[in-house]
Length: 479
Ligand code: SF4
Image (cartoon, rainbow, N blue to C red; front, top):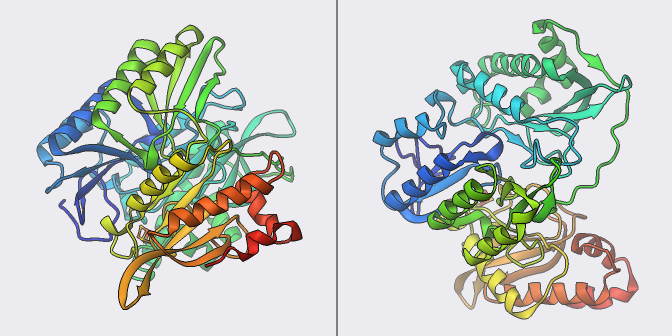
């Protein structure tokens, strides 16, 4: 395979050409990396790129090589290390998602790591599934406090306790609860039958909007019930329907940053913030060494584009925290760069109106000099309305646009807050240039700091502020 033209998503065996190089993406099931894998990736980044790596919002790892894709001669080495799919055809299928704290989370009902492995093995041994849309995605939620249950997956299996006090998995399709539960031992058969039936649909309707059909197209055409009936015909067991309402679980999206006790008594994990998921090869190498010397030799990439070092004995935590700081990294959730999200922007995507990543980093730098935050603030930059990097608005969303300023076309943003009124939240500023943008965000944060209720998040504040006369200033600070 070869370097492709935009806008095809990159993989390892087929980089995507971007404005500043070729992007190759390694699929890391569940985001879990061991030390030899980290060292090989760091070496790869040193040899073929500018030395930077980036964790993606599906806990993949991507490397931007300077002028050509990763040479095929090293694919075999990466496959031997488990960093590349043994089955090349499967490589484009989306990474399998699970909680980054699977197996160590104190709230978990079940350790999903074996399920991730088993489903990856199934994919590797069924190359015919490469006929599915590469966006076909599966996630496992084991009931961890660091949940992935609210992130987008075509199929999500979410652990719960049923009326017989047994742990089962609730089936969600395209984010919707089907009311069906399966036992742990049935999960892979159920997923295999769901995927096979989706494959049958893909043969019947091979192209939708010039692309392979997504699972949502199947659900729209066949309906959920009909799809599930067809799947059930392939299963050695019948679907179990549950009428139990799932309890609401409060999710703290950045609750994994910082130091936290594990399920294993006497051990902690440390969540490290990476601005836009970026880290240098030397940082990866050093973190792998820390994991080797003080942990169990494992790094966990998160779908929030950060990473964790796990299994650190309590008496070594302070030393590891100090070492992390000496690498120029931190584990605070309240710095402006901690909860920053941006799509690839104009450097990597032809649809982008703005250079989202540079603007996001510049904003974080600017805010760090002017404000001290005491709550995580999620600031999401999107180069167009597709919102590839983050589907759910939380605090602040900036959507890239082109602006005509005195007959010159410049980059700018419409700025939204909270989650009400539109897919991006409520519009606060319209048509702010990239230069004006940091000042606008600073104003929003200062109003929040002045008028919020004590434990209120920025998003909660923004959702109610316009309804409250006390926040008149909030309404009139429009350009
Ligand atoms: S949100 Fe738009 S600009 Fe950003 S990567 Fe997706 S399609 Fe490209």
